[in-house]
Length: 328
Image (cartoon, rainbow, N blue to C red; front, side):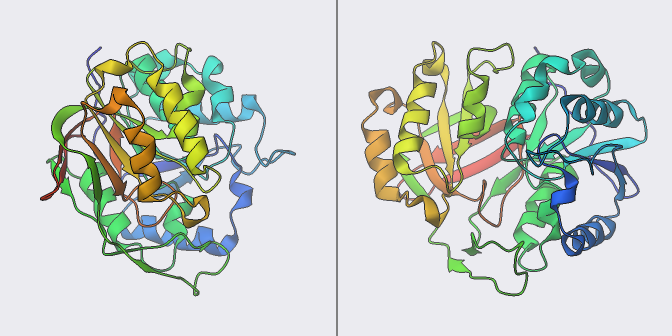
């Protein structure tokens, strides 16, 4: 299946907010106001799907409402991009109900992270449409320190040329949504190479525990020739990451992957680079591929945007590593 690349965003485009996981009602008025301002500054017009404010006992809404909103977003000819409102736990509930022909025949940008990993990889697997791991709607509601995130968002979704990724100078994993003015920044010591080597391949992955929900289903993408981008949140301790990674390794075509990029862990996970070296070093199936860790994506700030189904080149070396997004 040849990948389908949606048209890039441009000023004047309309984008739609959907809520395939947690409801938009979970996001405060102040965060929404700031997010709306960010989109306006980028020249994008915001619209909101019909059921985004609905909420049930799981901070979400019915499968029917969430599916209807995704279908609304993909079928609306005026909508050029689709943004989940927030993360959550249950977007994989929608997969059997989605109209894959509708999505394939109306290619447009879909971008989010965390629980959206299930939708992004399933969309690519079922239709060939390239999707994007990057900031969801609420992430644009940060008052401070959003420059790096916006830079890579624009490079990936407004421009067509390949781009190199560089480490951010600082990072944070504070709960900014609770206190916008009290932010704790940490110095970024840069990427950590684990296995040296060079690879070029199709980008797959995102949030590891969510990605694994697709295993054994029709919604899991072909791993052949891929570079896996993997991360997890503060609930994933080193032991969790170890077994979740092992589950991937047990897949029949895992040996066909070409490289691995691991996103930065939150401090609360207590997963260190030493832990990762031990975990990866214990798995002989990983010995032949380049592996780079500490890259700016996942549940810390700031974050890059990268294409699920696009193409990247990875060079890992003790003397200096390189990550280039080639096709997006």
